[in-house]
Structures are given as structure tokens and as C-alpha cells.
Image 1: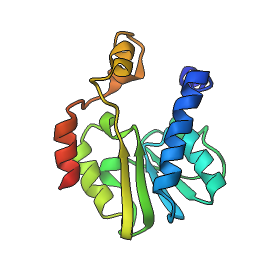
Image 2: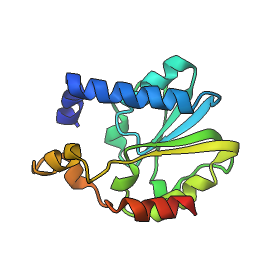
Image 3: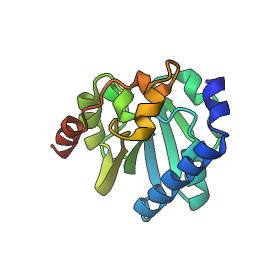
Image 4: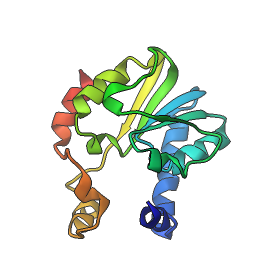
Amino acid sequence: MGTYLKSCQSEFWKSVFKKELEYLVKELNACKEVLSVECGPAIIEGELQEYGINVTGLDVSKEALEGIPNNIIKIVVTAEYMDISDLSYDAVIYVVSLQFIENYKKAVKETARVPRSKGKIIIMLLNPNTGFFKERAKKNNSYVNKIKHTNLSKIKRIISK
């Protein structure tokens, strides 16, 4: 995680995170309680706190959660088998994480029961057809090579159900 966190400090990644944060703040405008699935070090989630959004970070990796801000509630569990009550959050977000989950279909099904009435599910995906993705995929140590699912139309069909 050290190398990843270090790379997150680059100007490039800071600008990416800023755009993602702006998008989420706009979309989460009335949401106060948000669950972030497979949040990793919760860089963006920590920033959401500054907008009055209480974030719970869920990740399968206890190590990934060790570096997240102290004001974020941490849950170590898989996205496919969330130990979370139905209708618990105003929104559930996946910040470029769904494609890394082995059984993303099960994770989406679990996610669907978590938002409250009129709640939101926001899933941000990496597009494997972009130059950004293709350049990074050429590097053996790139995180994009850990993605398990790249068929966006199939993912979108599952989500729409």
C-alpha cells in the first residue's frame, strides 16, 4: 500500500481525485450517511467528510483500512457478503472499485438492499477503451492489471437489473 499511497500524492492523481470528489459532492447533495465499498485508503472519502457527509468505509482488506482517516467508520468484510442492515445508508458508492471484485454480480445485489428509500447507488468505473487505461495496462505493476472485469456493457446490464 505504501507505493500506491505515494503515487496518490502526484499532481496527476490529485487532479483526478479532485474531479471525482467534485462529481460525488454534486451527486450526494442530500446524502448524509454514505457507505463506500472497497474504499482502500479512502482518500476521496476523507474529503467527503468536509462536506458534512458521514462515510463508512468497507473493504475486504484490513491493511487497506489502516491508513484511512480516523473519522471514517471502518468495516472489514467482502462486498459480496456485507454484514450491513437493509436501508442503512442514504447512498452507496463504488469509487473505481467494482471492477476489482471477484463476484461483482453478488456485490451489486448486496448493494441494492443497503440504500434507504430514495437512496442512491453511485458506481464509478474505469473504461478499458481509453488511452489512460491502455497506457497503464502496459506497465506490469499497474493497478489496472488487477481489474477482473472490463466488459462495461455487461457490468451496466447487471447494475440496471
